[in-house]
Length: 564
Image (tube, rainbow, N blue to C red):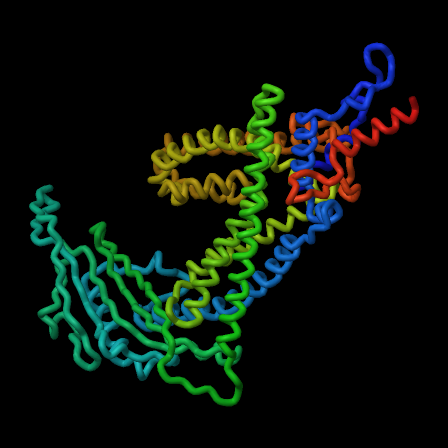
């Protein structure tokens, strides 16, 4: 960000040196810049050069904007990488989801997509045996009924396990019970064409309903995702670990049934594709390696800039303390810590890790699609957010960045205070309305419901879904919802907008009036030389600027001598 754009014009030499001495005569040649003035000039130019944008640095010292070019290149190639991975991941996700739906219709009796798994349950003992027997029969005749390319896992037969308390004597009529809470697990394997079909024919598999906790049926099915062939990608082989659970932990007379699956993606052992050339995976891996090299170079350059900024901030702090006796405020110290460089460094690290995971996924070493997606997606998001930095080089577009930076401390303090009120409503709604309202059943759903109300969503539905079993609680819910909506929408939300709006107008007014906002800006405002003036040429071997304070002082003295 160009902090020097808000500085005033060139300082007057007469402010540094008196034109006449005490007797009114012109100054002599022994009046020269002191070492402190030379050091101040040197430090001022270093700091101002540090805050220049890449184009100004190029005009100041002829340094080519390699970092800018590298960032533009990185944006392009990372976006290409993300789109490529997203399209490939989309096929994987589609294949997983459709197989999950297929397993629900194959192995769950009378399953309906409209009802979903939340409402799928059994309520009688014969229904439990009937549903388990249905699963076993469907597993046995899978070859004859499935329309996909599903096969059994030879080394993993179906396993049926029942979990129940060791001992339980429960008598609800007399309100007495004797229970041993130690959990016992009984399991047996089921092979195709060799399984029990009912309670009568399988005495070894008897369910102890009064002390039963759950029944889990697990098996593995293998399949191949053939749709990738059309996109010139080699098909993957999938292992679906299907888990069907009959949950009876509540012992309410309603046994919930749930089906879920864990997926392992493997490289197919033997394959042959004819009719179309398969995509060369080595080119994709090479492209990912190019992205990692680019991110490493970007990481190194940005880290060096951050270190230079910290060193420059230390020099400025020491100078102010030694020469002026002033302590530099934290606001000025943070000016040297460029947040955009920190953002780029974080994005580089995330992209490098994501690229490594992507290479391992392509070579079938790992199948962590979700983890890889998080790293690549977050890294790309930060890279695109960093584009705002280059928009900030233009004063008309810089207002957004300045407003966000100036309003951030006040916004954080405001959110902390509003968050306390928000959490108080969450706890109150959870404990009071939870038994009577589905949206207030857990703390997570309470928070989601209240956040939706702040944004104006589902207001009428939230009011209407409140059950009127208790008149007192129903009246309390009305007071609760009306006060929350009025407080957060009409007061807190408007105050939040006001904070940002006031900051925006204050920053805009400062830009129009040209008022300086910090001691650092006042310090740099003395230096009025433009980037292309040649005053920022620095001799690394000699350690001073080629056109610095001494040269200008001598020119000024020569002018005064000629006039005398």
